[in-house]
Length: 149
Ligand SMILES: [Ca+2]
Ligand SMILES: [Ca+2]
Image (cartoon, rainbow, N blue to C red):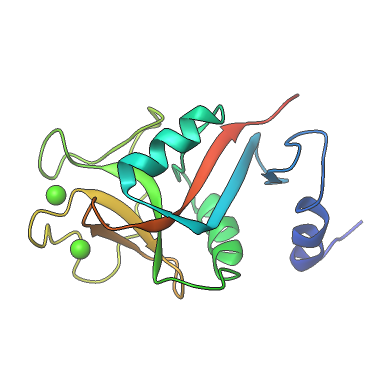
């Protein structure tokens, strides 16, 4: 049966076996938590995701980008949200905190630009494109963890 994508979103944002109160992506094994209203620095945001059994969001393929991008646009406020990418170990050497390979990319035009030493990855709410951002800014953030089988 064909189910329109928008109906899937409505379905997966309630309680579900795979992800509990987190949002399930029907096309992979992962669960996502959108913290629209708690504003934290990148490091604080990561600590909160880890405390909840996950990590900051990694995106490893185009379908995952499309899924997150559709949901992030529901954010009532803010410019961008933290993801788990950073180049704080080696400038320009981007990696994901959860250890996923940093292969798929979706940079906003002109980025990464390391503007005044930006080392943390955020996603622009209105477009879904990525920006290297100042790690000390307080932003909403997206956590990711593996779902129950
Ligand atoms: Ca940088
Ligand atoms: Ca930037």
